[in-house]
Length: 572
Image (cartoon, rainbow, N blue to C red; front, side):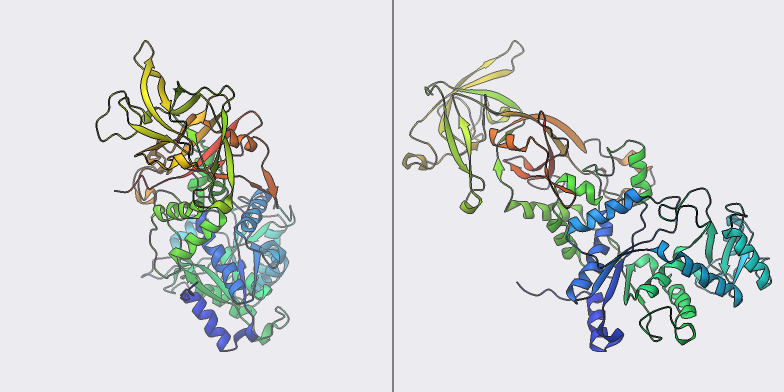
C-alpha cells in the first residue's frame, strides 16, 4: 500500500523528533468533558490524538475534563471509554482533571499571594459588560486591587461553602486592554454548590475553569503535544501564559520532566458534516424532547448511534483518514461517509433475500411435495465466504413491483407473455397470470418453471434479462425493517435561521414489515458481547441496501436497521 503523505501535525511531530525535543518522547491526550456521548466530530480528535501516539511509538492518555459537576455524569464516562475501545484505540492511563483539584487550588493560592489573582463580587453580566470589545479596552473591576490577605480570606470562604453560588469568582489579574479578549482578567474559579461532583462528591465548592485547568493538567502529566480544534487558537496564548507562571526552575518539582519541559498546543479544523448537527446542546434537546429515541438512535451522529446504525469502526476511521486535517474550517458531505460504509460492507456483508412488499408466487408445475434446498453463495464470486441454504417450494413470496400484469418492452421482470426471469440462485420461471381481490389488488401471481434451469447446474447457464428475489412462504420469517435516513432535510441546519427542530426530515425513519429468508433465524437471540460491546451481524438485502441486526431483536421478533441504501438517493 502506498504511504500516505503526512498531515501538518505529523510533520510538526517529525520535526520535533529530529530536533530532539522532549528527549524524543511523544505524549498526547484525548480530553473529553463527560457531559454527553461522543459523536463523529470527537472521533476526528480521537483518531488524531491516539493516531499520533501509535504512529510515533508514544503514549496517548484518556483524561476526563470533569470540572463542571452540573453537566457531568459517570454514565458519560463509561460510554466514552466504551466508544474509544470500539474504535480500536488503547489509552496509556486514565486521568481526570479532578485528580488535580488540590494542585490547581494550591496554584490559585500562589497566584493570589503573588498579586496575580483577585476575588470579584460582580455579576456575570457586569463582568461581561466590562470586558470591552476587540478594539476597545475593558474596564477594571472595582475589586481588582483588593489586598492579598482579603483575597485569600474570600477565596477560602468560597471553598468552605460560606459564599453563595454565583456571588463571587476568582479572576486572574492580567491586562484589561489586551487585544486578545481572553487576557482581560479571565475567570479562574467559580462556585458550584448545587451539584455534587461525580467523583469528589461535596469535597469542593470551587471548580477551576477550562483555561486554567487544561494547560496545567497537560503539564502535570507530561503531555508533549496538546492537540485541539481551531476554536482554541485564541486560547493558546492564555494556555502558554498560565504554564509560564507554573513551570521552569522557579517551580521545580511540579513536573518529573525537568525545568525545561513544557507542553505545546496545536490546532486543526473541526469536523462539520452536512444534514446533521454537532452541537451537544442540540443533541441533548433532540433526546430530551423525544425527537429521537435516545443517544444511540441510529439517526444521531453519536458513536453509539452510528454503531447501532451498522457503521463499522474501520469504516469510520477510514472516513476520518480520507477527509484529513487542515487549518481551514469546512463542511464535509455526509455522502462521503455513506460511500465509505458501502465500500466497507460490500466485501464482507452476506447477501440475503428480503421481501419488502410481498405478493405470493405459485409455481403451478412444481410437483415436489417437500420442496428442496437451494445452496447459494453468501457473496457471489467470493467462495471463501461460504454458502447458505434457502428452502424452495411451490409457493414463494416475491416483490410486488417485480410483476406487472401489463408491461411494455422496457419492463424485463415478470409479466405474462413468455418472458423468462430467473429466481435468484434458483430456476427460470415464466408468469402465466394473476389473481386479484375485490378491490383489484393482485394477491397471487402464477408461473411455471423450467426444472432443468437450476443455477449451478449444466442447464442453468441460460441467461435472462432479469433476476428477482424470493423467499419460501412456509420457512420465511416476519421481520421489521427500520429504514433510517438523514435526520435533517437541509444541508446545514446549524446555519439556518429557523429553529433546527423545524428542519427535521419527516422521512428519516420509515418502518416496514418484511419477510426475510430462513437463514436469518439464527439472529433471533441475544448478540455476542465482546469487551462490553454488542456484536450485531451485517447483511446486504439484495436490491434494498445494507442492514444490521438491531438490539431490539428478541427470540420472537427480528429487527433490522438500514445502514445505507445501495446508492446515494440524495444526489442532485
